[in-house]
Structures are given as C-alpha cells and as structure tokens.
Image 1 (cartoon, rainbow, N blue to C red):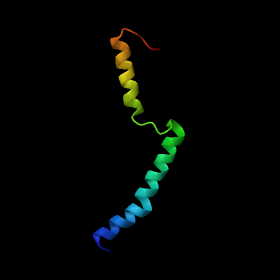
Image 2: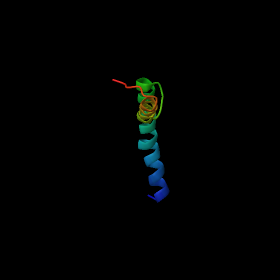
Image 3: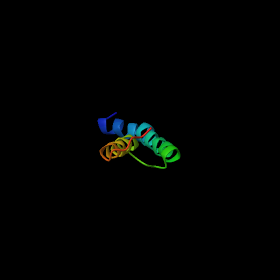
Image 4: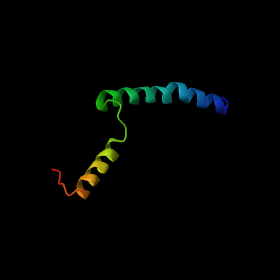
Length: 55
C-alpha cells in the first residue's frame, strides 16, 4: 500500500467512525455543548471575583 492509501483506510475505518460516535455521545450527554470544564472554571472565577461562594 502507498502512504495515501493507508491514510484513506485509517480515515474511513477508524477516524470517521470514532468522530461520529463521539458526536453522538456528546449530543446525548451534554446536548452538544463544548468546553464544559473550561466554562465551569470561568463561571467559578467570575463568582469568586464577585465575592460569592459556591457549594
């Protein structure tokens, strides 16, 4: 096989399948929202700056 053929096989048999599953799982678990951990850290930092404490 040529290198480009290996890449095409990888893309077709693994990468596309994996990304499709990942999109479905993310859609099911977090409604497609991204960067949840970072958004939570940002919310907590803003809350601390305002003098609020969160449980």
